Length: 201
Image (spheres, rainbow, N blue to C red):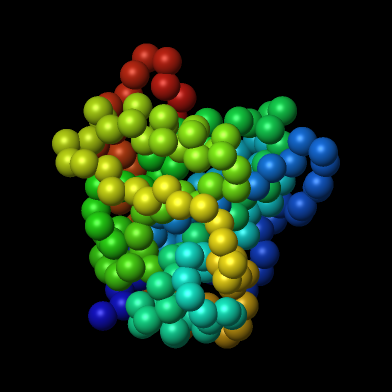
């Protein structure tokens, strides 16, 4: 059963932020459930040049949305973030990742169930791998259950941008953005204790 927990009124459109590549632009690739919901969180951040939704970590090249949802290709719904490391660090993006989803549920985010909704970090360098492992260990104390987030390298066939007409079907089976963010706020308040120095989204 494919239950989706967010709606994207502009699902067929790219992120409002356009790619502005500089020599300080780096990539971060995260999976944390519905990619449109994750995209909505990260595209608001200062220093983020673009956020693109896609599939990663599977064994088939150019899978369709229906194939990914079947769980047969091994792909996860992910976002790929292009960011200016002089304005926002990879470590900061990792901190926000832990806030943006529940990393303790295996192959599930809310009503979205399946391996495509798994919590995963695809690292682009050994430095990112080390940062992700350290951040995961640091974040663990905030959660009553073990963090199950995978930390794996980007490898081919791996990254594919979302294309096609699947968005209309996704919208028709989804909740509203307002409902999603309201439930996200409730979950974050109960599961993520706010420290004095922590900045809320």
